[in-house]
Length: 144
Image (cartoon, rainbow, N blue to C red; front, top):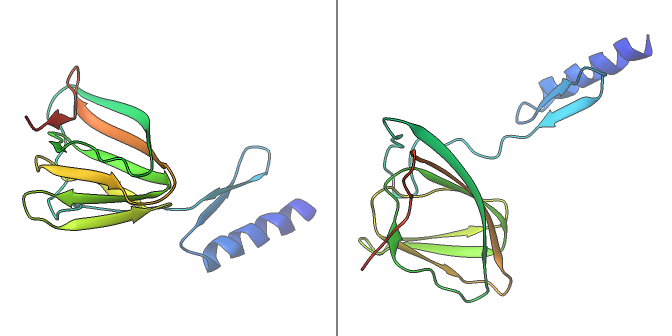
């Protein structure tokens, strides 16, 4: 009876809070899924286009010191970043448009456009980065 009541309570909570999904694992313990982002285009408004052959997913972390400026670069394939800490300003050097991202933000980086990032905060920026590339290729091209 207690399990049925707990299950009904969880289902009701899930129905009331549609922005989070709640389920039960095989032992009856709650599992909460909180959506962080849903995007169909990059930060500069481009549609997200995926590699066409031999797709490889690369996952890495970045620690960017306070005040650090990354070199001007571009990505030939999709790159996604989750800001775990800090404040990062990314500027499209072709258009001059900037976006500022803070802890908890999700970034869909521009594809094939030159841009530059700077840590504009007083703390390190920590990023979880996911790249989708053609197998064996890199996803960052530095401007010469």
